[in-house]
Amino acid sequence: MSQYQSSTRTRFQNKHPKRYRVIMHNDDFTTMEFVIDILVTIFFKSSEEAERLMWAVHRNGRAEVGIYSLDVAMSKVSKATERARREGFPFMLTMEPVEDLPF
Image (cartoon, rainbow, N blue to C red):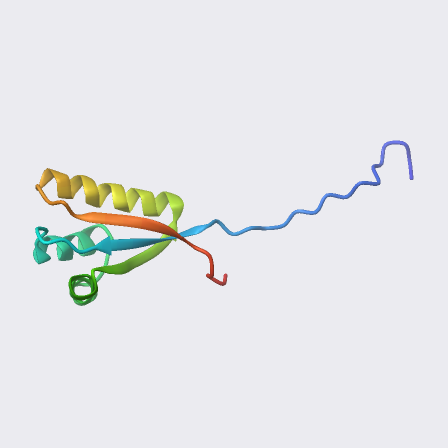
């Protein structure tokens, strides 16, 4: 080994970015139409999928509306929340890390 070579090897482990589950919560004031519109325009769900998710939120109190990278999840939650506040709704979305997703 020459004097310029290092005997130390660095191992890089490729890590996938952490993913986040976006959860939509039920309330007694936000209209079903508004929820469907948010799901179609911000989360890019089909009308049928948006209606199915809206009913799941209504019946169960909450529903997962998608799994995204941190930046995308934060952006979607922020856009939906800002729009809800502008329109006078207490609509709420939360994010939680996903630990068990295989890549």
